[in-house]
Length: 258
Image (cartoon, rainbow, N blue to C red):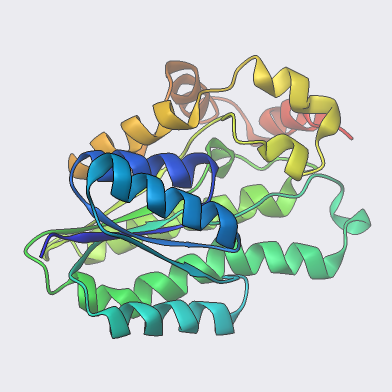
């Protein structure tokens, strides 16, 4: 039986494109998101266009119940899991004190807790393979504090730090760990985050999800620690290391001011 890849947040955007890219390479797909209709359509597309197996599970990973259900589903299927793509996540735009605390905590649970929990619970399955991979999706926002995206950037910084530490811990075993840090991508992120005023600006710098996915999968199999698609995104991630944090915060605060 061919190897399987689990992709969370697979119903659209980067997650969907990563699923398609892996299918082109012959991987079977386990698809997870909250949207049953989009998952069903994607599964049919994968099976029809790439002749791979594709099964899906509808779950909200912003809670322990959803995570545990997905883990049990995978164990029950008993498929050889060799890739885990922790892609599910979302952002919120606005001042910390003015945003709903419950919604911000929900974001942290999805952006951080789901990544950590799925990685921990599925590592035993991944470790059974001769070679396996974990791809955690962060953002270029992981490299700096971003006012009005305070907890989003903090959550992505946590994902990046966790990924690098886990990569080192697992360096002598069969499981490689990479962290994808995309910049602006044409996924509708800005509008979903409430950044309507910046959506048009973001579109000028957007990469397509397919472009990001191609770079991500190549980087994953090359066992890169950090994968930053796009030259401008690489330059910006490097540049923030050369100037003071307060300067970067002023620039970010001015750019994303609500």
